[in-house]
Length: 373
Image (tube, rainbow, N blue to C red; front, side, top):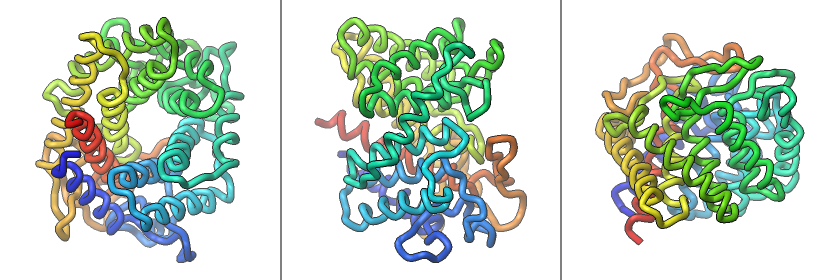
């Protein structure tokens, strides 16, 4: 592993731990991420907590445990899992399939890679995704319950989870085929956001590309030769499209704060999966892996170069190709509106933005570890 990136990932972890990790309602044996820094009183009391941001915090803790296994971090992962359920009214589920998919992915990795098991959570979440499959309504699975909006941010991560977990590989395959048939822009080859009442929602977000790359890479690694070739070809096409249109200068484009703060980090996570996990020894396979690796490393270098430093620890920008702005107390804070969290007045205040920077550093760590072996 490249020690430079390991050190940067460790600094990023320390920054989030110092500024954001706090006991839930002062209860012993608990921990969640405070959603803003500097925080308001409501933030410190977890009046807002943002379910899917906490899932990514858990995923980052698992990344860190893989990089540098420590007994104290194993305890932190356990506390994060316990507190998530507690803050969610003693339940794993909520009304949003994309939220649940992110938690399922993090819990599956926590169990498989860090030895933190929650035996009832994973089958319960898997059932949610399997039962939500609605081809008669145009899906896919919907974005949230009682909704007819079928989108990549729900189907992508749910598909990755089902590919990794249990007996659901065939459904994951069907989800990838649905995305490829329904949501791929024939001109740019990028992934559209979703489809509602038969009409395309044509927004193209970085993280939609990321989750589809993750799904296709997982399926390429898990299916037989004929299906594998199909999934490999989709990865080749999409990595090239991301490189050309979402990282034209080599650096993944930003999406501000709030929920958008997580988009770049998620994309980097799954580009790193392509770089380290896409099977195949053809020239196209090698180009896809090399391109994915290059985007991760150039984004990570830029994000690090443009960071601020507070008390010796990094504070990342919402846009990795320009100077990070130091957040301050006061001003508009991120708010949950219409099923999404918008940005704070200074996006860098949002936990999502800092998690994304941390995720990016762990991704850089992973791609350099493989390239050196």
